[in-house]
Amino acid sequence: LVYVKDTTHRSADRANLYLLGGTVPTTKQTIQYLHRNDALTNIEALRGELEYLVAESEKPQGGDTDLADAVGFFDNTTAAFAAYLALAPDADKREARRLLGTSSPTSVVPRREGGT
Image (cartoon, rainbow, N blue to C red; front, side, top):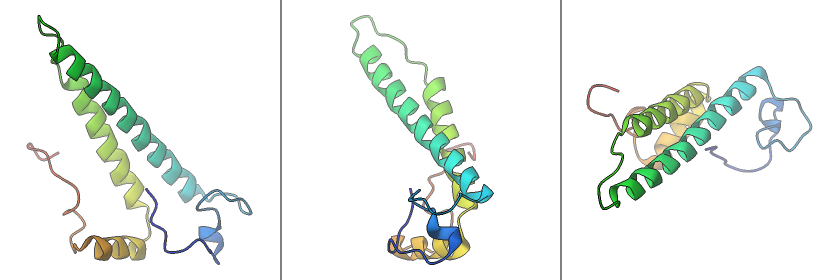
């Protein structure tokens, strides 16, 4: 979830990028870590929910097919990533877009029907 050009950081803002120590994270970095952790937590929950739904679908009598929880975990994940990326430096986002071969900030984020 973190783009890295190299592992040498000369600025205090970058020194704690990998929690190698040396500096206390800035408030902005702490908030980014929280968003990242929220995204990872929801990805794991989505994975578990999808495994559950697959197992339910394989039951002879059919099982739970309610996708509400899975959709909720997906929505929470995309919101957390959006919040995380909103705090990333613009130069880093431009470089990531260059590496991905896209110029649009929204072209790498799939949109679901209904505008979400």
